[in-house]
Image (cartoon, rainbow, N blue to C red; front, side, top):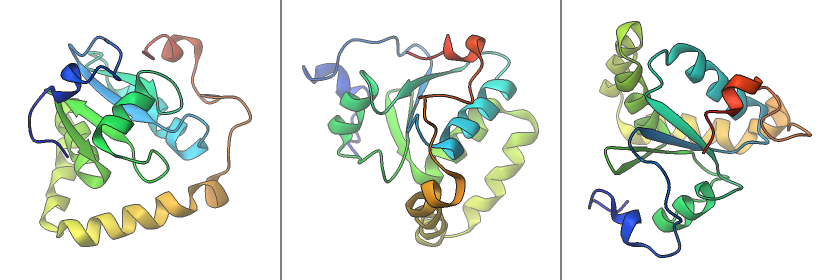
Length: 148
């Protein structure tokens, strides 16, 4: 990851987008991923997080900028910094606040162990949860309007 915040703004391959709130870049044909986005949207009452498909712009360009294969991980941009794998979910918990912050206790588990489990699920997500025939199939119309 590039430690310089907002480095994507200097990358001509990344189109301009509204980054005034966190941006969650996800695989929109993955049933598990779309379900997770739906869950976050439901609990993000303040609208602190926007969403972008990794298969479309600007999500694809963000993945390329950070060298992240969207087939391996999502990206959460928050404060201009990129978070992936379990670190991304901890940042989501911070943004959602409230009871979700209790999940931060799992940061005591070393990152290699946490991310090993994350990678196991990521590698098997299509087999275990399936693929949606239509992108963002599990999202409501109101939720789709939160997509960049």
